[in-house]
Length: 128
Image (cartoon, rainbow, N blue to C red; front, side, top):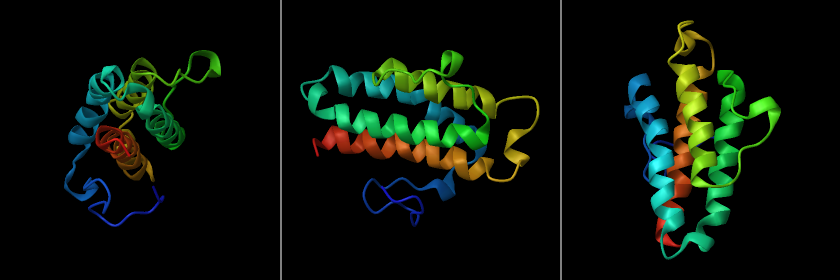
């Protein structure tokens, strides 16, 4: 998944242009539930590399958002719960009182986080 993608993504169809900040937060908050379904399904083991990639994308996006993802700097496990932990931490930071979406780069990082979670989820669902 390239860093800079045209919208919509030619692989997964994600279109960040249409999402406002509350939509991004809702998308992030849904990732744990959605990944749980995929990782518990018939192709759970096959989906692991996609889960790893989704978690990597979420963690990369967390830095500019200043989201505290891991407890004491530890990386969450590559499980649905780990993805949920990362996504929820980002969503919590985005809903903070300091108006994070007004900081340079935060909207782009939030969009990248949502895209990473959805892109790799769709790849896992397709069994690629």
